[in-house]
Length: 263
Ligand SMILES: Cc1cc2nc3c(=O)[nH]c(=O)nc-3n(C[C@H](O)[C@H](O)[C@H](O)COP(=O)(O)OP(=O)(O)OC[C@H]3O[C@@H](n4cnc5c(N)ncnc54)[C@H](O)[C@@H]3O)c2cc1C
Image (tube, rainbow, N blue to C red):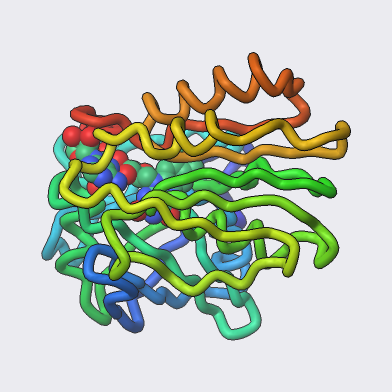
């Protein structure tokens, strides 16, 4: 993204706006949205991406700008735009397309936007970041449906000779998605059934039942509801003795709390 001609070098620059081209249900509770934008905007929209989500039906959102240091400069007054973190499941700059899976959890500006998304709807990008993974001979991945796009990217990029396990918590069999994994990495789906999202201990229990793999060429990547991540992180640091460089464990959402106030 470049500053408009004539702006001072330190001036905030406009955000990259993406347009919805198609919407499909990947599973009953995951909406897959394909967005188009310039090759630069698509390349900069991930792997993790700070999305600016307008109110449902707002066809001319008052976007913020982004300062050189990455700070978001919000317009004064009500704007209805909310900042939320997501993962680009797929980025194809050559075709100007980025694909994002939204969990339709029923509450919150991003879930509401995705539920109503239709071709022509707008979304903007205000920065991106890495997934936090690291290559290793043995991988442990653990996450819920919000982490599935990241898990699918990590598995797709993993060394074909990697070994390990991916644990994915979803509501039930209809929420499972095809995952291309190295032959030596098993994918195990954990079904929480009627337990609400963020209310189960499935991920922590599954990790607690695992023996630590031998050796130090080991990396664990964990993302899910914050309390579940805390429990898994404590086990991996304690019982498995993983160093900071050997794991990345991040709460992707908090039960009962919005990620940030709606704009
Ligand atoms: C780096 C990163 C990458 C992420 N990638 C993805 C992704 O690719 N796809 C994706 O769907 N999510 C992803 N998330 C999680 C997503 O940012 C949160 O779920 C976020 O809260 C959704 O915003 P919202 O506006 O819909 O709800 P908010 O306004 O943030 O929350 C409103 C209410 O909904 C509840 N809530 C939020 N998320 C869920 C959920 N999943 N299930 C049940 N209740 C929930 C909250 O507890 C709160 O009570 C990611 C998070 C991070 C930090």
